[in-house]
Length: 539
Ligand code: BGC
Image (tube, rainbow, N blue to C red; front, side, top):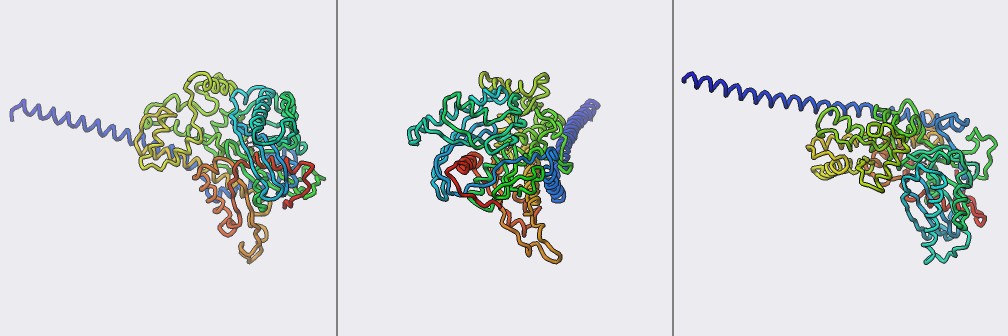
């Protein structure tokens, strides 16, 4: 071989080595990046840990806080509010009743016709109206004028078929799904807003008066004679269909629970007397807090950026307004730590709630204004990673997870990513949803423990749990997370079983309820009407 040929061979070998070196380097770097992303997932899994042991601690904490909230005003983060619902519909109610249900982004108007004997709900008509977002942060009067106009249109539309004359007085129940300190079954004062609403001039106001005034301004002959929280409506409907229903949970945009309590256990209202000896208590459990709750750095940051920091801590870990936002924060962290999702898109950086990066000088209120005007008046590209999208990613059962790709592309502008990355993101959704569902289950068992329906009462030495008498116990559940998100439901049901153990759990039935908050309110309006005299047994 000549010298030239030797040099050429050496150069060629060097080139091959260099190329191989670059390829190896790339592989090592990409492995490291993948390792970092897996590390983010691993940390998330560890900090979202919900072993049965930990869930039992949450159960105990919930029961202890319930006692504290019943013992004194302000004794706990759980408000444990009186509802003045001390007897429930018997099934003999008769007549036509109306309800307005204001809970989150929409308002529902309902008309319920009752036949006088069970099952007495003959017809019910429902209409949903989105609430223009600027009304969630404007003045109380504007919101109530809007509510009155929706009812007016609802009544006008029914004229054709209902045979209910326009000028005849209508009875209406108002479901307001925010913390309200009730002073009677038909009056109450708004304590605070949750779920992104923020209308300062309403806090401390008598809400039924505000609604009644707005209805009068429109000349409507409607009397608001019942005020309830959505959980109470759900309990009423649950109990109406199944008398063993003792508690209700709403797990949708926000979350809360109520249950039947003996009046003598409501120590902060000594001397409270009801014919039934009991009353429904609105727990406002969204504000529950315990050091046993598995909290992550994402929860801490989300809370700090929220319009209500240090408030509604439980709600922020388990309800629909926040789950998608937690997942978005995890995905953002992953894409900041590596380029597995390409570069960090501006859409991925826009939070569901106040954006600290893009809206540094914006308050929550003006953020909502920006957001609503962007949606209504121009095509300003604001992205929100809603919980419904998270659920769709989680439940994508196509072999290639193409739905995951579509959502990433359409909502977060993330270009197509490899299958292993899609699988990883589905895992993130799973961890966040599983924690939420299991904590909700612990909350439910906490209520059962408080009222002695968790199987622990009556177990005496030597006797097994199955020997003790365990009454059939039904919990009514309303809200999209439970009724429409099957993985969430599965995790929740499974956790109740795990915490209680199979023998006890077989006596506890979780029942999904639809539109309960509105229909239940209308049933209560009928219950409160002077024509109705039956009293249903509550406990
Ligand atoms: C409110 C509760 C309501 C729950 C579910 C919470 O944010 O404080 O009053 O029942 O959401 O709608």
